[in-house]
Image (cartoon, rainbow, N blue to C red):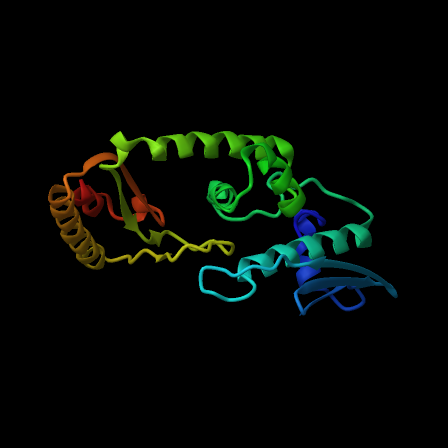
Length: 231
């Protein structure tokens, strides 16, 4: 909705006052087809998208991700008709922090590198500039993965799932950081145990750690004295 309405108006859109003109959006999914209907002032705008069939990793006939893709496109097109505008979406309908994961999935599914940007544009409304960027990154990563000399390399991730506050749009499994130092220290003690276990696994499998990433959450939301123990 932020693509169609100014930020300062979103609160009024989500919580309309008495007498305000309201736009209604309905979404239906029937027999592999998603249809969105945007209505306002007696006018109704329809847009339907046929979902691409195919089993997902769990063996279901239609992957949930495909339904979500169709919903996003149908809603976007319906709102375009309703508002008479077509706002540019810098990353299309993609959400999340790893667009490269989708690129790899498409390539592994048979999409050629030469067709990847076009596929992302038609199926995810991704601008070709970003599509070409993802293509270049995906191509490079595929080359690195094929390098047998890198098979014994590993990256280590240390997750600290705490933040000073929780953003409304956040999808990470993170919570508000405990304010008392004892609770924070108890958590870090467990992290230290995990690190010791990882060290044993690295040695057992003769791995070479090439990268270390500390994320969350917001790792620095921990007390400085407690956070220092991680190092």
